[in-house]
Every structure is written in C-alpha cells, then in structure tokens.
Length: 125
Image (cartoon, rainbow, N blue to C red; front, side, top):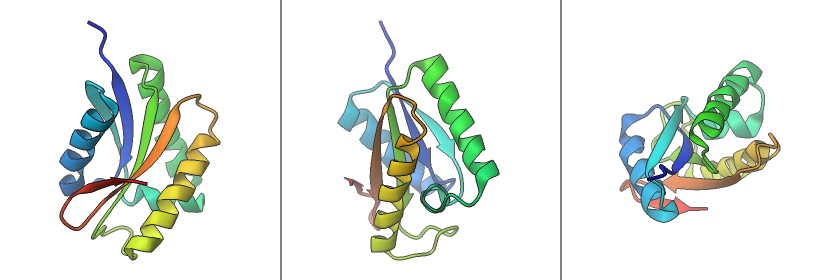
C-alpha cells in the first residue's frame, strides 16, 4: 500500500500540532503529515526577513517532498501564538502571504493556508 504524505509548516506550540495533523489527514486524505516547526512561521514566511530560518524551512520541506513524495504543503498559524502575538486578521493576512511566498519556491506542489482558532478548530483559508 502506498503511503500518502502532506507537509505542514506549523508553529512549535504543542497545542497546535494535533488539530493541524487531524485536519490535514481528514481534509486531504493523506496517511501522514510531516511537520516542519518554527516559532511563528506565518510571520517569518510572510515577512521574508529571516533568510537563514526560511532556508532551513525550505530545506526541511524539500526533504519531505523528495523522500516522502509529499504533494501538499500547509502553512499554519494559530490563536495565542507567543512568537507572533497579533490579531486574527493579521494572522490571516500573514498566512495568505506566506502561502504565496512558499508557492514562489517552485516546488510543484499544492500549497494551502490554515488557521487554528481559539477553540483549536481549523479553518482552511
């Protein structure tokens, strides 16, 4: 049986891990979700200022694509993020911009953004 993977770029916050994994498995019908974690990745990827961190994220995402044949990348942001303490609308904007920036990496995969809300519910943006 072929194993199907997706890749989630998610915050290091442990509260956001399970909701993201469960949502991605159910929504995209994959078997596994490779996690690339960073503190406040929506901010980092939308601003594009921290080049070393972005290159590290890109390298880890590339491993998931190359070795696990992941065809889906998720960029997640979440409520009450310690590393990115902005309002929900600003998170939405950052997630959408981060998705655009990740698409510009030219990895030939589908890229989506998701928001993990106050009650740990997940919304596809």
